[in-house]
Each structure stands twice: as C-alpha cells, then as structure tokens.
Image (cartoon, rainbow, N blue to C red; front, side):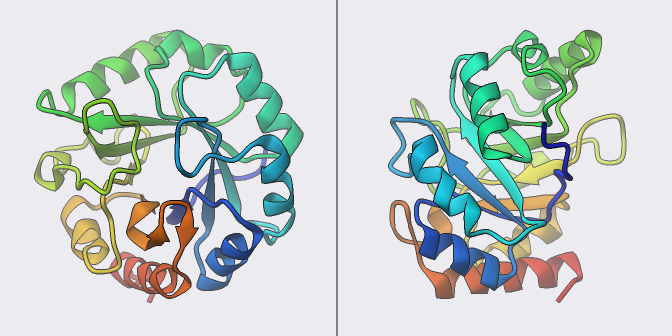
Length: 225
C-alpha cells in the first residue's frame, strides 16, 4: 500500500487529461485531484486515471475524490492507482473511515448556516473511533451539489477554525480563483488551498495560464513566492 506523504499546499482538482496533468505539474502545484464521482462533469474512470497518474512527476500528491462510494471500491481504487490521499466529499459517516484501513483521508465538509459545529461533532466522533482524517477540506454549501460549484465559502466563519489543535489541518476550497486566492489565504490562514472550477476554460478542461496564475498567487500568499 502506498504510504507516501499526503500533505500539500496547492491542489488542482478535477484533472481529466494527461495534458492538464502535465500543465498542473509544470505550474508548480503539489497536489492533483482525480474525481471518481460518476455524476461530476470532471469524472474519470480508473482506466482513464491511470495514464494521467503515470504522467505526473514523483512527489506530486495524488488525491482520489469519492462521493458516497462503497468503501471496498475506494480501497481498490486507492491501491490499484497508488494514490496518496482519499478525499471523501459525500455523506460518509465517521464509521465509514474505519473501513478504509490506514489509508490517509481528507474529509470534505460543505459550510452551511450551522458553521463549524457539525465539523467539530464529526471530528469528535472520529477521535472516539480512532479514525481521524489527515486533513479537513471546507467547501461552500450549495444545495444538492458535491463541490466544484464555484461558490465561495464563508471565509469569516472559517477564521474560527481551531488551527494548531488536535483538529486536522484545514484545506480551503470553494470558488477560489487566481484573483481571490491570496486574500482567501490571508483571511482564513489555511494549511492548503484547492480549486477546480476557478482555473478552467470549461468544466474538466484546465486553462494552463489560470493554473499558473493561481499557483503563483497562492504560493506568494503562503510566503513561498
């Protein structure tokens, strides 16, 4: 099983082609997301994902995104493709994480009116079950959608996220673009950022210039640029 590193700063999600994978790597992103949710416009099959992964340089964090998939399917996909991180983006309960063995998980939450409280409750349950996710990703809440909507999460609410505690590091997603990612990082102070629709020419097709601008702006705000 791949026990490689799963930490990153800048992730580009929804890669659907080898060309886009190469462009994202060349731009300096350190993580890519492959979306295995069949209803997403950025969906890829395991067969389609394999050449994309083969085109990525070693050391780039490879994330598989799943929505309410059977745990067995997630385990098989993770192992067969040599992924580094599982991103759960559906309604998977804490007990579900125990079925993934020791494979690292990034649990996505959609920030709604209830704010951070449901996230805290979920993580509390994970702590009791001994299955704490490696990372927490927060996206905007859009009714009936599982991310990739381009809606911005509530940054002011996210300023209250308990950094530096037992809570997993925060990955900020939701409507991030080259124009707003710097302000988002300075406001929320996340460990990492993630974008899909914010760097696309059309759903599933990345714009290399936008990807490059996004990575540059994010790295600058993180103090690496």
